[in-house]
Each structure stands twice: as structure tokens, then as C-alpha cells.
Length: 376
Image 1 (cartoon, rainbow, N blue to C red):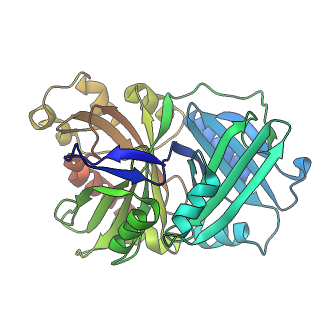
Image 2 (tube, one colour):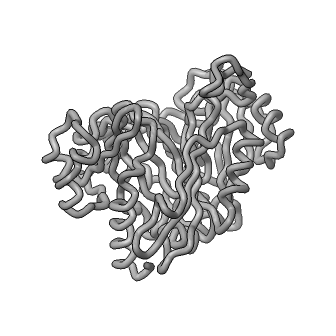
């Protein structure tokens, strides 16, 4: 446990019973892990890292692990039907199953969260091989998504015990992605507040930002969102729920095609967003586009920025400012055939917020895509 100061009350402190070191990895359950890993290598610039499957003694699944700087993605496929992995893919399509969080003590993390009402997914288990030992535990969160706590300070292997290093000839140039900035979950009608309380009570998170349907709305649709942050601020999970509108919101579309609650998007940080987006676009990644008129009054709205507006306009990169600086962000189109999971690329120039000034332009762009799909 650690002690943190509550903002605005310098003399008051509270105990952070779940000090998180950050996101350890994000695991996707997919229909074809080999092809998924190849896509994220080719399009996003990830590198081969580790593998587990029949050749390593795992008989029911295969997992490919890729990494770029501090971002680690795992793609897992069932080898047979009639199991949780195959059922997850059948119900949801390819999607996020595990948001793994690095901790100093996985057993203590499980004890602290389950005694506060967290539903256990995995009791603490120690796994070891010639490279050392790892302790894993986990709890459920919204839908079928889970948080796995990873204690790896006594491990030097490529990923986890049971995995072997995955060496490949093909490792494309990286795209300057650095770490997971935040992960956004979509939950059902009137379920945002219960999950906010869950993160507060079970995991000791704080609600640091709130957006209602007046903040996040267009002519046709709306949603509400609250940003939950770990005590030390290293992990952030915004939670969205639908709001009443004339037509179907993006959250409603996600819930319909995902068949329930789940991770809507993963935000990946970069320090060179123009280079990152340019490389990804050249490799086939499709991004949402806002009208050119967005850039006509950009500097009047956000003030001076260091970047040249021309490449931002060409690539469709959005800009917003808060009290501490500004940020640049852009969103991919859904990366699955189902209109569910997508990615955000974000560069922070001091800003800690999430682009409130871009919501209208962004969600109108999303609605245009919904309309093309016939789902608005």
C-alpha cells in the first residue's frame, strides 16, 4: 500500500490499497490469433515477442504476444469449440477480454479487491520457469471483461511462464507508440453509476472527469461518460453509457453488435502523432475524418500550438486544450467487421483531459460511419 495526497487538501492523505504500476498487457480473444498478430505488426508496427500453443504444451489455445515500447498486446484463439474462449468470440467477435494491471503484490491486490466486493476471476496463482516466477490473480469488471493483476518483479522471461520467445524474420518499423494511455468501456443503460461505484469501492479509483449528454451530443445521439483513475493516476478507465437521442448512439451500436458490455477503444500514446498516424495510414489503418471546416477556427479555439496545422488537417488529427496544456488525438475506424473495437492515438502536450472540445466533431464523424453501415 502507498499513501497519496487528495487534490486540494494538501494536509490530508488516504491509503492507496491498490497501487498500480500501469497496464501490463491487453489480451484479445480472436478468431485467428496468427492473422491478428500479423495485422497489428504490419499496420501498427508491433514486434514479435512470445508464443504459447501446442508446441509449448498448451493444448486448448494459441497465444501470440507482440510489443512496442511499453504496449503489450496478446491475441488468443481457441483450438476447439465448447470452451470460454470460443464462446467469447462467437458472442462478441474479436474483442478485449483482459485488461492486465501490473502490481507489486498480486495476492494482496486480489485480497483487497475481493474483500471490497470484487468478483474473483482468478485466485492468486504462482507460475514459474527457468526465467523466474510470476504471480497472477484477477477480478471481473463490466461484461465479460476481467482485470488480471500481474506481479513480475522476479521474472526475466519474454512475457510469462509457459510462453517461449517468438522470433520472426518479419518485424516492421515501429510507429512510435509508447504506452496505453487509457481504455474505455461501454456499459448498458443506467449502468455507468453502478460501475463508477464499483471502481471506487473495489479498486479505490476516483472519478476525475464527468461528461453528460449536454457535453457529448449531436443533433441525433448522445452519451454520458465518467473517467475513473487509479489512486496514483497511472491507470484510467473512462466508462460510457447511452443517453436519450433521436437516433441510435455509438454506444448503443456497440452494445448491439458486441452483444453486451465491453471495451470500446484502447488509447495508445505517442510523442510524435504526425509520424505515427502517417506511418499507420500508409500501412492501411483507416481513421475517422472531420470536415475541413474544423481547422478554420482551430487556433482561435485552442490557442497557439507548436505543430503546423497543414499535416494535422491532411491527416485529420484533432486538437484540444485544458488548463494544463493541449493534446492531439485521432481515432481509427473499427478494426473488426463488427462496428465495435477501435483505437485512439493521442499525444499529450501537458493536457490531462480527454478532448472535450472535439466531442461534437468526433461524434458527427462516427455518426457518418454509422449511417453508411445503416445503424444510425
